[in-house]
Image (cartoon, rainbow, N blue to C red):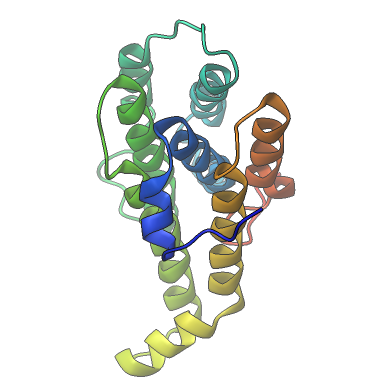
Length: 196
């Protein structure tokens, strides 16, 4: 197999739409525990509802003939956002799950060429925010270095690289299952958190 050329973003944008959707679905899968944890701590939100929408995305990727109304799914997803008056750290991470999944749904409802980059950025931004919160470093230069070298950020970059590599091949049923398993990450989110 030949080594892919170009940087991470170029490779992401070079993927076919279905490959991009598989990449985004895996990232959403890995973000889900953040939403579930927020719901568990606050009683707000509906993790089962968000998961059901993501399950339909995987169904669409696996069964090409599947006829799913993603307009309706996007409406349902909008109802599952954290309350707008909740600006807590947990609510912001839960909102990232909703925004990432909404970007993915946009690609299933029509053309959204930058959605794949957006979902990649959302996942990395959540990790950055978590590290910044945990480290409490005031100096911007030191903080940037801390974020870059932090094990969670290294894990996030490795994870996205692994999903991209898997999505670059032909998406047969076994590959899709493997990508989904990768996304589930044994129930551990991009922040190293578990909802269960």
